[in-house]
Length: 305
Ligand code: NDP
Image (tube, rainbow, N blue to C red; front, top):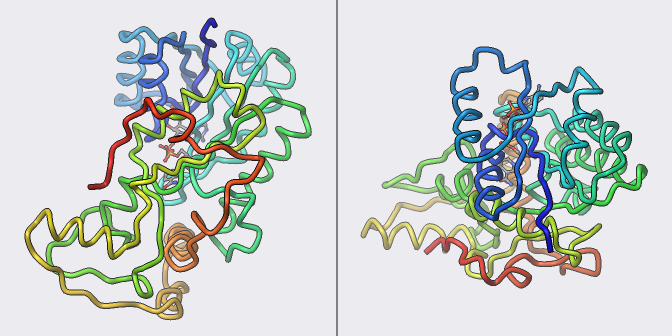
């Protein structure tokens, strides 16, 4: 089967650059949107040039210019969007409605993967404010895709390892402490950690796979389903030292919320759902989903240990 041509939107981002790399590595003809708005952001420009040197095509297009998006979309079979969606960086999830309009008009797209790559928003109807905005906006995008009849796959990537593992599952930290750690609740709630390059590899694997058409692909690498205590134990073994442990109840965890800025509040509530409620693993994948490590065992995913 011929491999689909792919357009990656948000290609210079944290996840997007990995998607470009994975798409090229899998032999897809890869197009990367080059937005004129990046102007003189030299690092982005140089990254785009490095993509070009690796064989990607750069295609000019702007979210402020509908026809440019239509023209870009017409070049390919599959569109993957990795536009920003973490408030501490930037949150542009609803801009995708413009991309959906363009995909609808172009009429040639066999699969669209919107910027998801986290908790399954369809299971977060009861999420707390203000973090629920992430899930609500992603659901608005899903509805627009489905109303337009655009073929899709949603990738539920669970925890990016860099964010969650690095800080031993403590919000606001991405480097592990060598002295102490605060356990969220009893520290026994399981979460799922996925290396960012593996997220990109699974995503690219799925774009031509009929088994994930109009479904959600859940990334649940079995050996990376761990509690915070287990993560801490792995770290302790690595450094050969036991950390001092204290514990925080959910009430104490949420109490300082009012004193935080908006982006921090959003992050805090996301950690709450993952680490106290177990929102990533408290459900079975039903008929509407598939699990990535089962579908693509050839990907030797990076293990936490
Ligand atoms: P980034 O913050 O790195 O941004 C990605 C890209 O978004 C940018 O490079 C830029 O693309 C594009 N972008 C930003 N602002 C605008 C704008 N105003 N107009 C048009 N494009 C814009 O995104 P991430 O990689 O952090 O996030 C990607 C996805 O992954 C999101 O859906 C997010 O929610 C999810 N995520 C999940 C995490 C998890 O733990 N599960 C953790 C982090 C993210 P360019 O300049 O290249 O055109």
